[in-house]
Length: 168
Figure 1: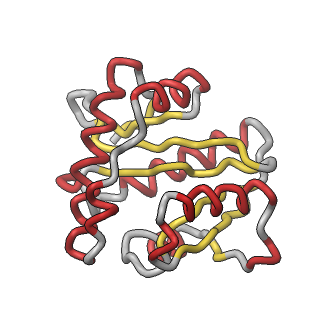
Figure 2 (figure 1 turned 30 degrees about the vertical axis):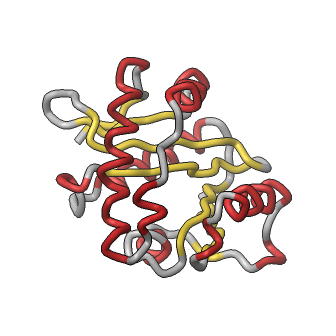
């Protein structure tokens, strides 16, 4: 599996990966998450132009997973990491996170952060295994608080969520 920067022509495929992967939330009685629309092509293009959109590609150079990141309060924040379900449980998500950690080191960023569902097996429990720790409210930066507020406005707080950090 190879990780590289996403190309503009691949952005529709990232939306497709997100839609298919989102269907797994139906099994957890979270249909609103399954039905949530992926980021728009314009939003994805912003990440791609900034150099903050990476894809995991198969042997045919076709994306099977992707990661988007933002700089938030001096850390790289994982906005989205998604792997197509047909490629799940092969370490692709971890490869994407490790690629981001390597990139962070090249630009002098001390940590990765993310927000995620606390009780979804492939969310917080997975990120704990990847070296992230759950942050207490007192450890949240202003940027992470703003992200939490946007997520709450979008209705995501209906299910328990946490902020996490991985120091590099």
